[in-house]
Each structure stands twice: as C-alpha cells, then as structure tokens.
Length: 169
Image (cartoon, rainbow, N blue to C red; front, side, top):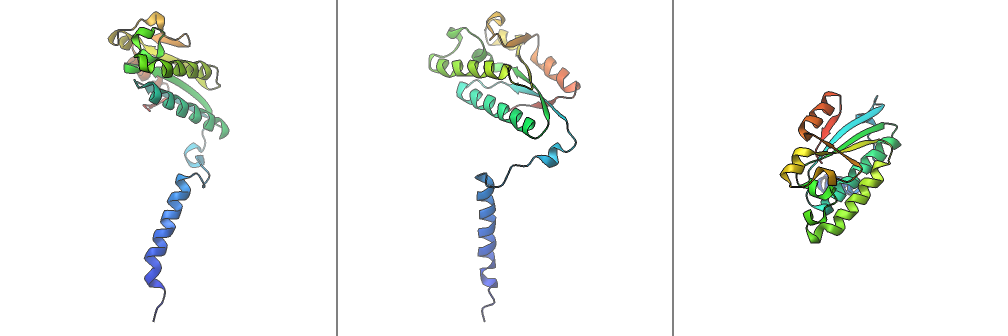
C-alpha cells in the first residue's frame, strides 16, 4: 500500500529549493521592517579601504543602494564614508599614484563620489591623513568632495561614540 509518504522527502526538498530560488532571484519582496521598527534615522560610518577600483566602485554603489533603500522605507540616512589604506590612492588626483590599468575605473570612482556627495543622507567623505602619508599621496590632492582628517581611526571612533554604526564593507 502506497501512502504517498515515500515522496515526502522529495517534495520537501523541492519546496526548500523553490523558496531558496525565490529568495535569491528577488521573487519575495525585500522587507527590513523588523530591523527598522521604531527607527527614524540610520547613522552609519563606513570604513572603506578597498584598493581595487572596480571593487571600490561596487562598494560605493551598494552603499548608495542602502541609502536609497533606507529613504524608501522611511528612515533618514546619515552616512559618513571614510577612506584609508589602499583606497587612498583611488580618491586623489595624482594619476602617477594610480596604476595605469586602474586609471579609467578610478575616474569612475571619482564621478560616483561626486554624485553621492550631492545625495540626501550623505553627510560627508573623509580621507585619513595617516593613510595619505603611508600610501605616499599628498593630502592637498584628495578629491575636492573629501575632507582630510588627522587620523581615520580617531574619526571612526568619534562617530561610533555619537551613535553611528561602524560598517567595513
């Protein structure tokens, strides 16, 4: 006598696979309401040290998508993007400090930073002077949208003390 229970593991497996596929393809609506419940503002200090311009541009795009998503969900973003480490060479204007094969993408990074600097919720960009020194770049050649701070670690600590979440994408 076949009760149909023999196929139960296969049916459950198909159901789990279907849910996974639906989630990974965006079929199910994104919902951050549980995490955002009661929040009016989202304060984030991003610690950015990516030295690959293509990956850096991708991270900037995801940060901006996050900003837009918060706004769409009724939460006012307050974003600080802090550059240090190898990212330092990609956010300054001395082309000699950028590998020739990276210059085109670095120009796209500069354009993206300029666009984001005008976006609601982006409070500012910072460049660590210590990183400028260790990366052998000049602080006066940092992109004009970016302010130079003495020490990026101190700046990030201060933002955290004022309630900003620390995120290192």
